[in-house]
Image (tube, rainbow, N blue to C red; front, top):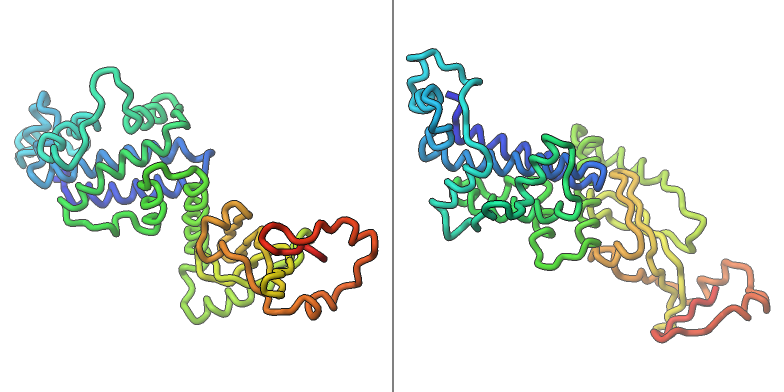
Length: 317
């Protein structure tokens, strides 16, 4: 019998991994993301019901399907592919009756239900409401989390996308934070595809060689190595230097981060949302030593200097 709880749970995890991968790829793949998330949710709902008994996910109006679910499909030579099962809404309602305190009720009647509306819209008409993409994933997570506890699966269900899942659950999360987590998730996938099959020792040698080919940007003053927050390789943190008058040292304000190993690219507003890249970098040099390597400023250059800002930092070059 193919109505198996473990098989359905595994299928759900596979579909959800594909959903988050599509979501991490951004707007062009959002349709696939919401469709796959809906399928993943339906399969896990059915896994919960099947664990109680397979008959709980078949169409009660179809005798052949009921016979198959009861383990006697051979009496009428019922083919597994012909078994009629319930759809997402019915599966949701049946589970909610059992787990009423853990799973929120779904909207009834003509009220919008983004989880089902997006999945059906993409499947049948190639359309979804882009404004509801995050809401679709939030709905999935709030249903799936209690089901994982009931099925004893655990948080490893989310795999490499757990960080993105956690970010989406934060109340009032800003779109910028979600975008950063999408970029990190996509970069982790790229890294795994490129280097996941290489042994640790050889991979370290390859990554060392890859990191050496980073080309500094012409628009920046200084470039420093920094650990990539996605793949832990050495990336390039580029920025503009300034004199911190309070400490009389030269520091760099990051404006770009690039990792050639996983293709992660972050810019100034996004860097502030990644703890390991958010702070200015102390170049550990006194201004007179650092700027001695540059040509002296002319009078015309000095005319454009506005002196220290409110933080006590002067942007003299």
